[in-house]
Length: 98
Image (cartoon, rainbow, N blue to C red; front, side, top):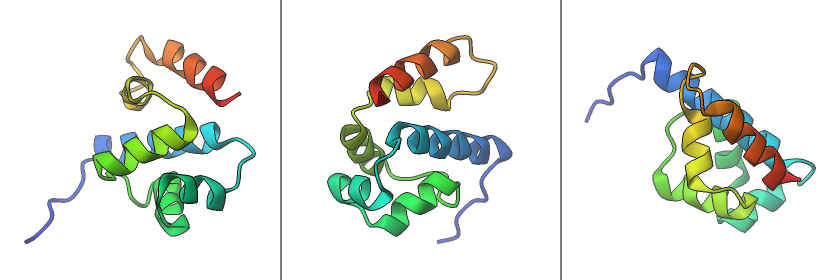
């Protein structure tokens, strides 16, 4: 099976997701968060750096639970920057990460 190349929009969404997860992780170590989510540190590193821009749903759900983020906020934050709800969602994630 040949995988279809990702579009620029999919790559950008993956980069936004990675940045969001790094921000939400705060001062916690990557090892700690990955273990809490049941993932390898390398998987979390790839997601945070955008090298794995389309992780599986259950991977994101596990990370959201470990970081105490709602999946709704993740969806809003990963939407294109022109989305008007992005600023509100970013504020919610900042509050949740604090």
